[in-house]
Amino acid sequence: MRYVLNFKSNFTKESILAYKEALEKHPKKDNVIFAPPFCFLPLLEGYSLASQDISRYQEGAYTGEVSGNALKSLGVRYAIIGHSERRKYLKEDEVVFAKKIEQAIASGITPIYCIGETKEEHDSGRTLEALEGQLSFLFTFPQEMWKKVIVAYEPIWAIGTGKAITPNELEKIIAFLKEKIEVPLLYGGSINSSNLEQFKTLPHLDGFLIGGMSLKIEEVLSLLQES
Ligand code: 13P
Image (cartoon, rainbow, N blue to C red; front, side):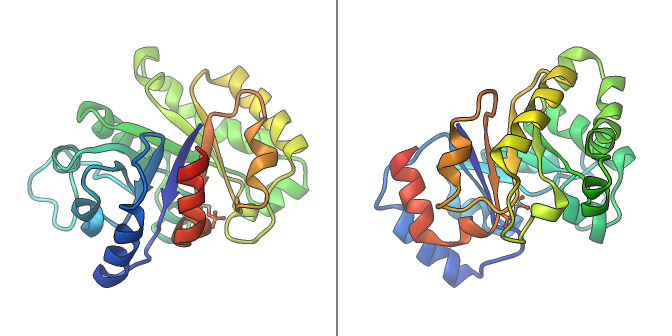
């Protein structure tokens, strides 16, 4: 199982140093992957690292963008692409995600591409249709390229709401997604230390993309211990 800890736009230098100090008392694990804000990536050097985004451009005159090569040089192994918060607040779409996925792969970074339906799509029984739509552009890439992607299924209605999907519903969605695209699959959305166990045993689920819980050092330490 992989656990990708998405800190989103949280932490300051002081608070992340305190977090790191607590982490250092425990052995590092390759399958526990930290995704801090860009500026804190070097502070977590030596841990398995993901960036929360990546530039769609290779490098050059793109003010404010962080290139795949820059990330790679910091030891970043994964890049989260297509998170629903970037779709919503930054208005990013599949055209942008395709470029970011290309850049990640060209830099030797594994893209973690996020998909997920809205509450409205979910409640009206259009989940599978929505997911299929979000995946479809990947198949414009040659197979050897889309095979390098990890897909993270994050239902938007479950993100940060405390209401995770049920294992039963997730199992059906995993079966659907694995049929469409044979790549590792993560689940994200209100995972916490109390509900994690019931998802860990689901067949064909390869790991988790975790938001809120990743900010709680005690919970992360027990994750490190158990994983
Ligand atoms: P929560 O775990 O806080 O619901 O966030 C999930 C998420 O968006 C991870 O990328």
